[in-house]
Image (cartoon, rainbow, N blue to C red; front, side):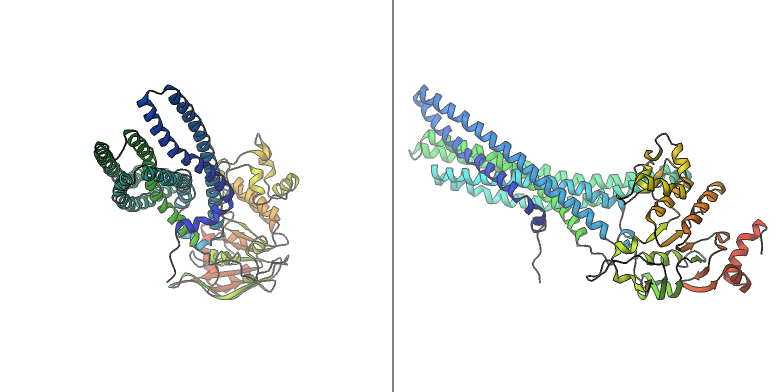
Length: 581
């Protein structure tokens, strides 16, 4: 059975590049902690000279103490800034790595994940881990070194008192470990609930129009209150543990100090210990209090951060099912011939979506996919981009199996204009040139003109530099769709997928978008998913999908003559309009 990998081991690849900065910080740390026994020794010497009334020696030792404090402060400054620099860079590298990893995951992962949960992981969980790493290197390790240095000095002063001091340590350590385990459990539960809360907020803000339309504000408020209350209760349990831990730990520390005072007083009375030595010893004990408090509080933070680390590394352990083969090649510029051979596909094994699909589209042809909802139309075109892979069969582009080429080279030659256009916060020019850094403004404007978007863009006060708002809220549906078409024009794909690109538009917007699509489609292999059958009369081929199978295929006129499912669907749409062929 393989040995479990600790979170420290998992973090090592991100910490190692900062080793020289950490090493520099450690040098400052050693200077800082080395001053601790020095201060205790100076306290002992001062006590001795104070008892003798030696003002010269007192003045001399006071000046030395001031110098030690200055050096100590400089070392602490160097330690804190260098540790912060190194730990923040390490965690930034981790955050970037997690985000990059998420970008490699396939669509199946995103179907089963919540956007709010992923956002929480990449923000709150990473921030918590960042703080834990900073505290571990900037406070936890220096505190442990301080305790080691000071204990060495205390053993030198009086080994018996030091041994007595150490008898309290195991009890304190066991107490900390028990509280830490409880805190980790409660912290994981709290973070999971915080992710639920973030996911709910994402849903609510994304679906605000539906909420308004159904007057469901009170329903959502109650749902939010339940999630918020569960989150509060989980966090409160953690706070209760900490509230008990600190008094218990403080009591143990106080009892240890009282025991030392009693034993020290007894040793002084028997002549085994000088009063100045006992003052130096107690000064050393005093120097141990802050490190112990820091270790106690940081132990809690580290335990809480462990749950964040667990969640992050669980995400990093997820591997994409759809990825480049080790010997994948770059797909060369294609003509656009697409063939599906015996393709069967299912999202889950008990629910087949596509069954033994065979079709061929020649370069420059338009193939329309129609049929009842749930027939597999969108699933079929999603296979072209390798968002999923079929369970059986294969897909060829120019007689090249798409599983043998890199995903990036495949997807660069396939353009998609979806029904629900996704625009990103930013400017119009950034959205048209999305993912491209090698295009000029002239090329972007040319694409916008082909997409019938140039005129309305120029009407904005800032033109192409106008901001579209979150998800394109500042644009109408027709304007968003034409931006998406301009984006596809700029990509200049050989294969084009139009997924209900005009179904949600008014008549005027539809005419402009359809004209733009007609210009975009020229010279390309086009897959059109359409419920509005009047838009596909001129398609070279029409495939009718029903329950995952090809029920019919042919041109518009031949399918009407056959009088099958296509003719029924067409008549159902046209009859209310008084249009029949």
